Length: 237
Image (tube, rainbow, N blue to C red; front, side, top):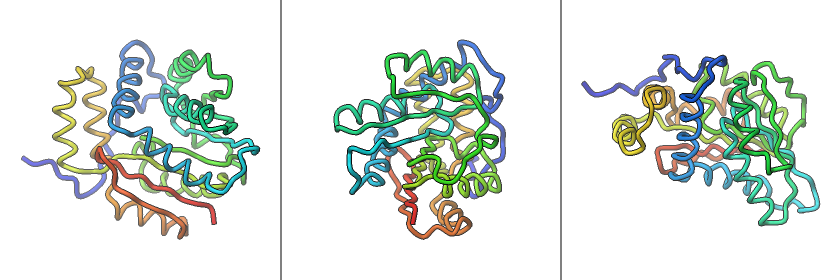
């Protein structure tokens, strides 16, 4: 029977357990980062950052936080971009899983512009204008609609320039293609199961438009991108 993607799934993911640790989690984090990089996912977030930086002087220090940073691959990508293009970034990764943060820190030990904080993003106090840019890459789909609305309201207040969401399209085609991808990349059980659930917890464009209205945001862009992603850039008015 064809998978139904009419509504967002509320099914839990194994990775939602913040106490999880060990080699299976490490392998899953690194495989997710590798696939995201290969399919152009990091580029989508970077494009959003570039758009929000337009017109700014490179003498300014730009403070960027990645909510749900995983193994820190996106932050290391941003660090490299800053070095190549004459920017000075202060990069912060936030994740609720201590094992994940420890792993990300180890991978980023040669990146002095990156730091990490282990905390639940719903408990992190986001004061007004506390960051220049907030990134949320493959993280927003983990939450239910009401929690997403609350979180986006915090992002809107805390980000001086705006925020960039890079997340999955909820699509039956993506669901079945991911099943094939599992064999190509030899994903472990957790990565396979969580990946399929993630797609069913992903978004359609109308979902993102609805969230934009809920937080009273009018200055935004939503674009479908390969591979079955939405790039959602919200600029602070």
